[in-house]
Amino acid sequence: MRHLSLVPRPTSAATHPEILLHVMSSVSTLSSLTFFILMRFIFLQFQLTLPRILLLSSLLILALSALLPSTFPSLRMRLLLLTQHLFPSTRNMASSSSANVYAKELQTALLAVQRAALLTRAVFNTTAKRTLSKSDHSPVTIGDFGAQALIIAALQHVFPADAIVAEEESSALRENIDLRDAVWSYVHETRLADARAEDAIGGPLKDTQAMIEAIDKGDSVGGASGRIWAIDPIDGTKGFLRGGQYAVCLALMVDGDVKVGVLGCPNLPVDDAARVDAATGRDQRDEEGKGVLISAVVGHGATSRPLERGALQDGHAIAMKPVEDITKATFCESVEAAHSNQGEQAEIARRLGVVKEPVRMDSQAKYASIARGAGDIYLRLPVRKDYQEKIWDHAAGDLIVREAGGSVTDSDGKRLDFSKGRTLVENKGVVAAPKAIHPKVLQVVQEVLQETSRR
Ligand code: AMP
Ligand code: MG
Image (tube, helix red, strand yellow):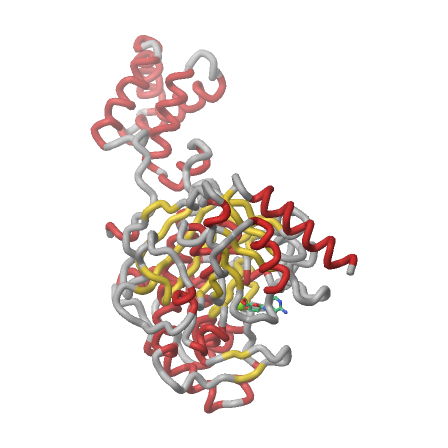
């Protein structure tokens, strides 16, 4: 299926007629005399059938090339090519570091986020979002529960051994059957319009029990070892409720480093070139031309594609926009005054000479926007000293911005450290900007923070 083929076939991979050539020239590399004497001897001694002779001779060639690599360098290379063609799963191990070893993870994550975004869009378009208040007073809706269930079910189908850190847990659904059934009605109905794409992520969930179990699989404590996915099923729930921006967020960390990141932003324009402004952050409707999937794989850049209903659309590379004149830069911040220090951020912008008003929008749509050059700088300075940022609020965005040519650090200039558990306990605040201007922005951030801490 064209849309699902995310990794171009390496041009070095052998095609069928080439296989024959490899075999023939491999054989000719050996002394033909030695070869025939050996074959005749084996044939006469062991009265072997033709398939057995072929198998034995292949083993012999393999053994010789492994034992005497300097004598048979080209033979070794041809055998490697042959093996890679016949057993494609070995290609990643043997090929250069530019091969996308996370192709399957990326494809799964894109499809999982796309399917979950179908659900969140359906909830976004109703008035009955069934909002609850969590113990930290943050809101959660049937959209959050449903999207988390769908994403985790997809991950468990393809990568059953992976750990998952997700924002929500199911106790409210266990206690309230009516709420559980409301979530189930969306989960049950949501599927990708392309049957092969839906199959690739496991198809529909079986029943309410499977849904609840899926939601609770997101309870990993995180950490520095192994494969761990981070999920925010609806980042910016307040924006989701207000009719602003929100994002479905998924990232894979391996040994504490983010390797794959996907942001589904149903209310951002498909057009990467459309600059963000105050209107981007508010009064959103689900309409034609909206909805984008922004993703990145470590070492492979960042990509944008329209968020669709079926198979994945083709993606194209995105990059941050170089900022030639910082005074004309667009900086983004949270809508919620409780989530970042808008006063300090305004002072930083003023000192940098930025003339435009900040663009306020909810969720990791801020990371997505600056990564594709629709905005330039994202500042998130802490309001409360004791607040620890959650890994699911940053993992995908951090990788996407870095792969698009940006730098993401905390206010001390340290990289965000995703290896410490469910929160970014080692970091305070976030400063994201194109590489070339990040040092300047950081310098002003630190000046302002030092002055306010002295007061
Ligand atoms: P945003 O939409 O950028 O304002 O970020 C939304 C996220 O802010 C939510 O997913 C919360 O996890 C997170 N959040 C909640 N309280 C705070 C806080 N005091 N400081 C920073 N982030 C917070
Ligand atoms: Mg969030």
